[in-house]
Length: 297
Image (tube, rainbow, N blue to C red):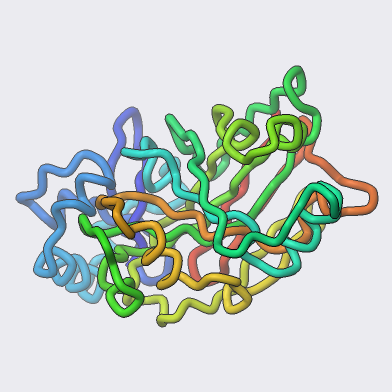
């Protein structure tokens, strides 16, 4: 199932896409007793019976009840996260190598374990939204396509074997980054936490539709030129390992977002970097989930 948050008229709704992706069904009309106003509330409160009811609506003669997708405005599935986004740094070998070249061999050592950091995101932008470039702060504006893991239940000290059980679903994430700020502060958080620098969408695909372990292509393009194309099978640390690490001694909650890292092909890794600038169009894609396009202003 593909869950989403959308605006229709002046109101915001939770919905699910029909199987053909052409229409949106409003969740409150399927789950009549639901009081969920946000995707996080829905994830936190949804039962297996609720999910079965949604499946039945999709399997039945539901198309005539939906709204054409073209008539709604998609937002990020989760617009206001409950916590900062949990991110994994240099989780592909090729990206590790290009990061090493960018920072200089003398300034970078391969980490013995995964690098984790928090990305400030008061609000996450969705499909078609503007990325507000702050050229007064940093002219090296970069893109990063990532698979986002959405946690489905409160958990702590999760083992590798238990990891899939605590997942609700997956989305596409663009970890927009200001590279000069990253380099000057010698850490990730400052250069990645500016407003509008977190983009996610177009939907959350439930875990039952994504065979585990996850092996999906991750692709990015700028103005139609492909920049990144890899597969999550090449993770240095896989999703069970990431969840086991992040939950060790730390509570994860429903709706928490884990951005699992980006492959090579970002602007900083190029001999002649092609950083984004106002007027650019950036698209990140995972075919099993969808495309997320945003515009730099």
